[in-house]
Length: 350
Ligand code: NAD
Ligand code: DAU
Image (cartoon, rainbow, N blue to C red; front, side, top):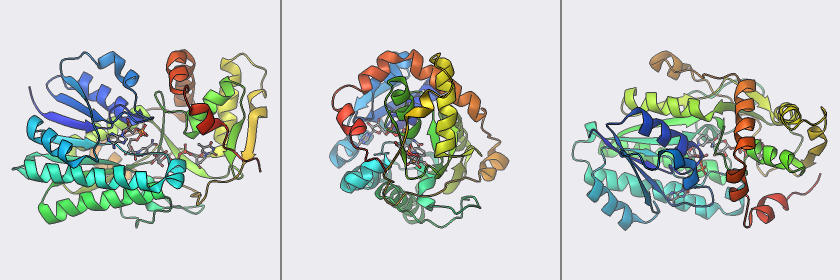
């Protein structure tokens, strides 16, 4: 067997797509998935690969330093691809400390364990999967590049910016081989229905209102999740130590235009008259500190490593809707318990 790779947060949205890609593509790697299984982590996301011989799941918390140190000593990981995080901006506004614990302390625990265990730093790689939100907010023009100054606004983005800084500090101070990628908004299957696209699909399906924050004019740059997983694969295997890559879809949408398009797709799929789903659109109180616009310049990744997005947004969105409509059991399971109270009863109409 070749490398043993620790993937953290592999039971989450992006992590599960990445674990699936690596387990299927690299039969000579052993992929160890470490995940705490918070509300966002779900082993049902990995049902199709759970019995593969090159895959192992471990339940655990990256905030527990003793546990992490023992794990590194036992498994002698060759590399780490670190995705475990609290990932939802709205939750970071109601509970910032949880984001500091997992996203900052958890990352430093992993860095410390790597530093202590890895005797040949040049052959061991620590890859931090990060976000474009560290760059703050754009005005009407311009794109985030790898040299854009960090300017995070939400507790979530501040915690990710902090963890990026720690990862770079361990490279500069201790010589750890590190790579960071900063990606734009992902969409696709297995996305927990708290984020804009899966929440809206769930609500339209169930004839519930679609909450649009503020005027719906905020802009995000959407990328199909499997394209993100492919980018991580390319960067992990080819990037120079200490480097950063931006990943994005060149696919900017205002929230309201995106939701109008989604409503049309849903009307068709659910055999409803055109315009039915759009009646569910409800403007609600804006998110505090809501960043206006994110847009990524991914030319470094495209030129250096030959990656590019594979799907047009319309195609990816239809694929995503099809996934949710044919995975009803998954959707019912993740929306049981206190989901209704947490996500459906909190909105204040404008
Ligand atoms: P997610 O919320 O779907 O998954 C996060 C996973 O981490 C879950 O499985 C959860 O159980 C696990 N986890 C949380 N706290 C943990 C802890 N203390 N110990 C161990 N496991 C823990 O998130 P996602 O959307 O898949 O994002 C994955 C990573 O990618 C995050 O680091 C996020 O910042 C980054 N990212 C996300 C996006 C996006 O659009 N979703 C874009 C760019 C970057
Ligand atoms: O840019 C990358 C980031 O994208 C990731 O780092 C985060 O982990 C991920 O959650 C995502 O953050 P956003 O805040 O952009 O995603 P979200 O789906 O929460 O919101 C997308 C946009 O839609 C944003 O402008 C807020 C708005 N929105 C969101 C929700 C949940 C609404 O108008 N209504 C909603 O109900």
